[in-house]
Length: 198
Image (cartoon, rainbow, N blue to C red):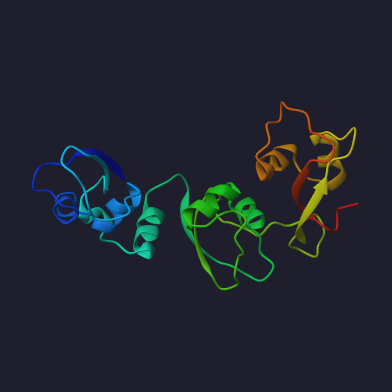
């Protein structure tokens, strides 16, 4: 989106101005808070218009997402089908990428629900991805999202040790600066293996 500051000329009306800038009279009225379609010579109007040519916007949302996913990145492009119980954290860890990257590559936010059967595109940093496993022979970690309220005396390292997770992961999940102190009462989101949690 780009904005033009337009000075109304003699003979102008909202229709002619809208056509000139490939927009609509209603949009011009809305952004300039006009109560009617009456304008006067010399009046200044803010006109929003597309910053790129119309060809840029010819693709549907799914086509734009596909183009974004096909852009070459580090790693191997993998199509991953979501399984029951999967979390962004599981998938990101399996492919050695961040939760944010997995979400962004698929037009999602890290908090969005993962629906079993949905296909994700991942630029995996592992040559042969394997599911997250524990030392336990039962296989895949039973990872759950857990809310944690910071207590007096807590630090990232004590919380990480208590839940058998990594300090860097806690910081990443919660957008924390590791050089700052935690505040009692602060809410954190953790993704923990419930078999290792206290």
